[in-house]
Image (spheres, one colour):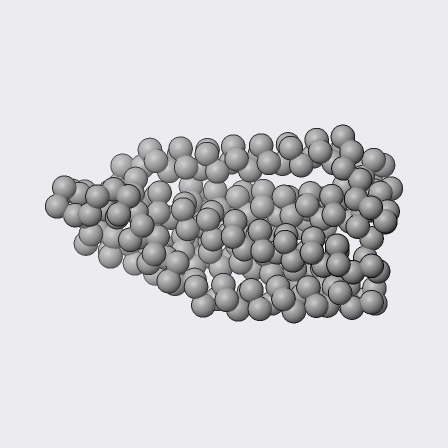
Length: 231
C-alpha cells in the first residue's frame, strides 16, 4: 500500500485512531455513568448494596473490553469495512498501530477510572475496610490481563468464535482468581483490616501482574507489526 502521497506515519495513525475513538465515544460515556452509579451502590452501608456495586464495577470494565474488541476488531472484519482502509494511503503497520493504540489506550483509561472509583470509595467510606485496597488492585490487574488475552485472540486469529471462547474463559476465571487470591494467607487475612497492608505477597503479585501486562501488550504489538497486508 502506497503511503507516499498521504499523511505522514504518525498523522495517519492518529487519523485512524480518531475514527475508532469516534465510534466508541458515546458508549464510553454511558459506561462512565455506570461507574458512578456502581460507586454509589458500594458506598451504601449495606452488604448487599456493596456487593452489587462491586459486581457492577467488574461487569462494567468487562463490557468496556467487549465493546472495544467486538466493535473495533471483530466487527470490522465481520462487516467487511476494511474496504475503507484499502481506499486510504495507509500501510498495514499503520493500521495495526492505530488499532492497538485505541483498543489498549481506551481500555486503560476506563480501567484507571474504575480503579480510581473503587479505591476512593474504599478510602472515603468508614464502613468499608481499607484492607480491601491491595486486594482490589490485584483483581483489577487480573481483569486487565484477561482483556489482553481476549484482545490478542481477536487480533491474531480474527475469529469471532475463538474470541468468544477466550472471553468466556477470561470471565469465568475472575471468580476463580478472586477465591484463589483470598485463600493466600498473607493477603486474605488482611482484607478486613482497618488499614491496607502492602506486604511482600501483595507487592509480588502486583509486580508480576504489571510485568505480564506490559509483555502482553508488547507481544501483541510485535506480532501485529509483522503483518504485510490487511488479510
